[in-house]
Image (cartoon, rainbow, N blue to C red; front, side, top):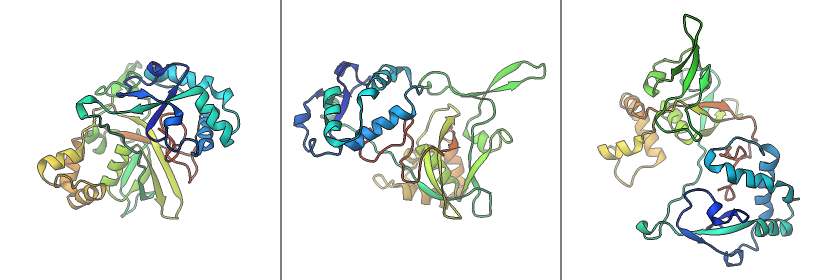
Length: 299
């Protein structure tokens, strides 16, 4: 099951996500372990999508597929396993991904990682690195999905009373206080490097000093292009090739605070967050469909 992507049968393979990887449609019978899998868990996830965000906005590229999925909601029924398996077999077709010929049939998939760090709702001597809310008057970057390299803006009123759209600044200026008074700190982390990692991942669990878990999620971005600081450290020889891990990156940033600030500012992209009160402690982070991801089920 994990080796195939399920696409909508009604739209045909050509109607699946644009840029479909090299591969071919296959039968459910050819999938090892398909009959014994937990189909009810997957359909429960689908039904949660139906109940929560059937009309949620999506990118133009995914709009047709989104609408086709919503059309299947009445057929989803209850989540008992036998009929759940038939639901997918009746309405989807598995697609085996082979990877591109240029990479000798090899592909690359990533897993979603939600970090957990200690944090405080108030700044203290130990917790000094904030995650910020959206600035007042925020207007997202143009395009759906947003075009890379076009700054987000915010609405401001000039001296003559006319509304203007002011581009948001890059990371270095935001870190230096360019949006002071326009954003709100949601929570404070111990290290700027920890906050940076959450910017990269887009969501996190923050364990507060009283033991409670605060979930934060992506709310918006300043629209500037993303630059990998890990790649820069590898190119500089600060971390040996093949030795880059999250722990080594965080250790390096903590051990070199001055260099770390300059390095992180090389990535002009800046992420704004919201408190994610729509998920429980046992739920995964919220994905692009607007519902929590389910381990080994969401794709």
